[in-house]
Amino acid sequence: MSNLQLGLAMLGGVILAAVVAYNAWITRKSAPRKADATLAPADAEPSGRQEPGFSDAQLLNSVSTPGSVAETKSGEKRAGLDALIDVVATLAVDGEVSGDAILAAMPGTRRVGSKPFAIEAQHSVSGEWESPRPGQRYKAVQAGVQLANRHGALNEIEFSEFVMKAQALADAIGANPEFPEMRDEVMRARELDQFASTHDAQLGFTLRAVQAAWSPGYVQQHAARLGFVAGALPGRMVLPGSEAGHGPMLSLMFDTQAALAEDPEQSALREVSLLLDVAHVPRADQPYVRMREVATALGEAMDGALTDDQGQGLAQETLDRIGADLETLYEALEARELHAGSVLARRLFS
Image (cartoon, rainbow, N blue to C red):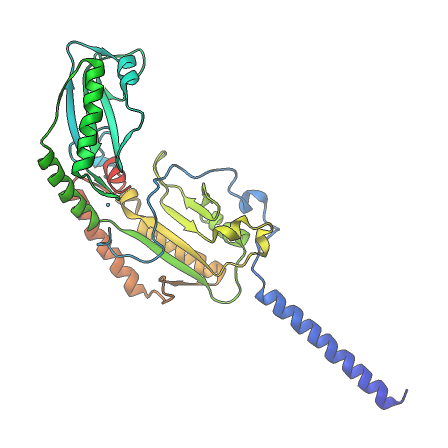
């Protein structure tokens, strides 16, 4: 082989090696970023903690300012029926009635149309109102149905169904029912629904990958570092709230199919959503401030850009304006005794 042929062969080998190396680099660059396998398992996985209870309210995947379709600890109300958001009918009993008798007469479903239906009884000894319990004696009973929720206002048909259920229970336990006027309660329901529809806010930020996509494990690892734990559904993580039994402060969502893939680490995510159901989280917890902090931290750690659902970047001025609007919303809810995060607010905005 001549020196020329040998030189060309060597040059060809160098070029081929360069092409192979370049293709490998491109492949690695475009592959989804994976979780760091060097982390201890306690850092990579949320140590078996599961999502706290949360309502079934649908979360929006966009930025919404207050005005879309809704108590601090000091303003908390009891968990039972409340005339503020319920129609309440008294079922007067002669003497006492047993909890067993009430439970035996309860209707098969605890709903009237799309509204929750409930029965409470006043304990003969403590005087407290509670859900009827076996082996207890009660001196008064009341039935209630919620005036409104995210499905809308109580209507005439639902009110009539409520009366029928409460009457049947009263007949079974020998009580004398007294119902409020349907027309007044339906009007009250519509007014409450109108207030709720203009004071509900479900905020959503979208974090989009700037360059390389992310694997589900990569997202989960970074979210876990910020306190998120596994949610009840695939593709969902939650940041627990400050009080046990309440819903999460924030939710982080990504593609369910990617989370369920046979090999999730090969799935490519280009975006994740960060969600806040405003009426479900106490104002004192400053959830919007936390939401912005989390979005910023994830964006910096995963090379992501914060946008709205149209892909437009969110300027700091826009985020500040949303925060100011939320303060106005909180004040309106508190003036109505429906403090964000309270039992009543969580019932109404569900």
